[in-house]
Image (cartoon, rainbow, N blue to C red; front, top):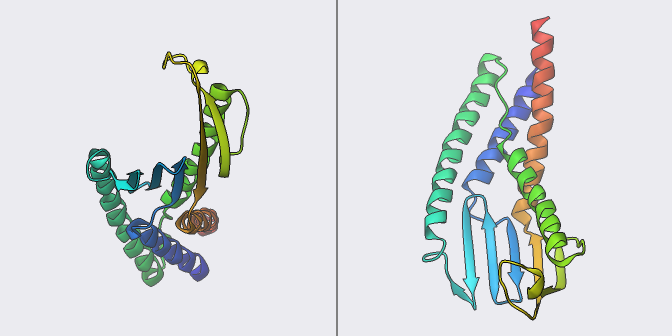
Length: 186
């Protein structure tokens, strides 16, 4: 019973760390001209080494910052709930936000592959550095002719792996907590 409570405390604390961390989770570069550092809580866009986060993506970042504040508040509630669970011997809920948001980023990779397949006609792994030639005549809504060649770099940063580990740990903790609830009901 105490091990499940300790797992919930660690899971809640890791959720809090993920929510307050200002570090980006993912890096995308298109030809080195456009660089994007993003997380679910903030997006930094650089065009020709000029930061566009204060102009172009400012409204988006305001929404993402409000999401961060909500998640910080929620993580503090989970943290207090897990401490109360240890003190009073109650089984508290387990935060699964980090698991779901990690899953969202992995689904983003799949979506990127599908869109790329339909636009250029071949399936590529969207992680790492790869050179891609995009024929403008194959994109019907642009109504242009010609080809563009750009090296696309797309990879997770260390904070993504921290979040993924936290999310998987939270999932395991939720399974353990569910088993504890079943045992206490008997």
